[in-house]
Length: 257
Image 1 (cartoon, rainbow, N blue to C red):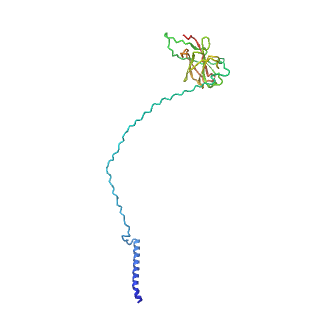
Image 2 (image 1 turned 90 degrees about the vertical axis):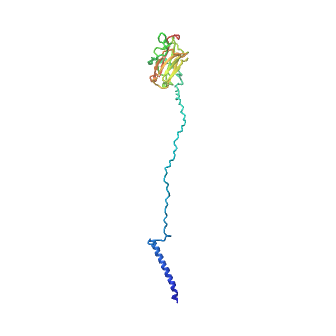
Image 3 (image 1 turned 180 degrees about the horizontal axis):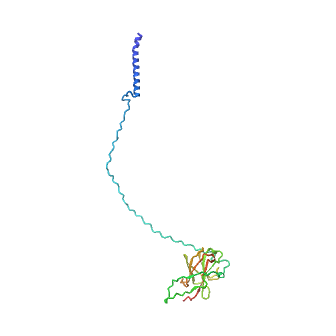
């Protein structure tokens, strides 16, 4: 009786063992791709739906044309030419004065300066003759000499001299000397006191603070700045021993001539 009651259970066990073996074989077959897995276990292929491409249309987009807008630009105002800055003329503090005035006439063993009488602009007389001037360059002048002032020495160039009347007396009033050349146009007045050149009546004009070979024109003017002498050209020699040119004028005719 006992063996007969266990038979159904054994049969059931055999069925489950068989099912287990069968499932194992099925799984193994799917792993090695012998058996096709059921649909719910297979990977679902995702279909990529292409997006709809719009065909390009020949739509003309209006392009704005460049609009020329004239702007008024003011023209620059003309720039005035630069104003020349006047250069200072070197004037020594001593102005040819020293504690013991040097008698310049004592050194008149100097070389005469070659000169040429400059042309005059005065109108000829009705008879066509040359104008008669009151003063002319004195004999043996112009002369060159070293600067008698030991303070300034070779630091300048100057033109000096006297204006003498018919009696060889220095004229000191109502008369001037006009010097022009190398950018200079200046007047010099005779002194009424003794100077480094000697007695009264000398006029002095510093025309440069360096040695050079500049050329100048010297002439005498009256109180109305009328030309009353023959103009004379003088030229320096770039030499410290001749850096002062002496030009003395002497009266050769009356003032009413």
